[in-house]
Length: 161
Image 1 (cartoon, rainbow, N blue to C red):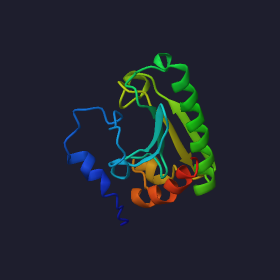
Image 2 (image 1 turned 180 degrees about the vertical axis):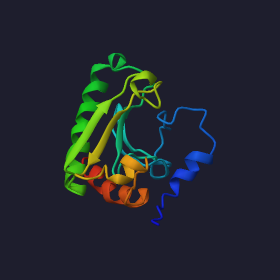
Image 3 (image 1 turned 135 degrees about the horizontal axis):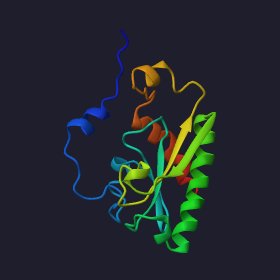
Image 4 (image 1 turned 45 degrees about the horizontal axis):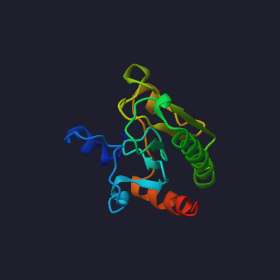
């Protein structure tokens, strides 16, 4: 029998669900490492998904609490795209994925887990990452601890300036 170790999942399963929006982050950077924030821009930021679909799963979101892409101001929309491009480049350099899923789910019916605050998903993919575990057992294996992924990615985002 194989044993899967994903200790961060129990916090999600049993822990209290936040009443406030997880994407409405404080202005100060004191909690950035704890929140897995990799990069802060003027209008948007990059954050790791605490409960990832795959190793290196990132999200780009505006600071402003809006629920639709049409509500973004031009500067916010442009910075989101700039950060999305940076995420794809950095993930490619750091993890050498075979592909990357990047997208946006607008509304709960479209699959958004947090529909009130838009966030773009960037998920690195490798050939075979949907192995028998995901298909038959409905289980995903994340091969690296979130803190290790953060430590790998943070210097690359810091270098963006």
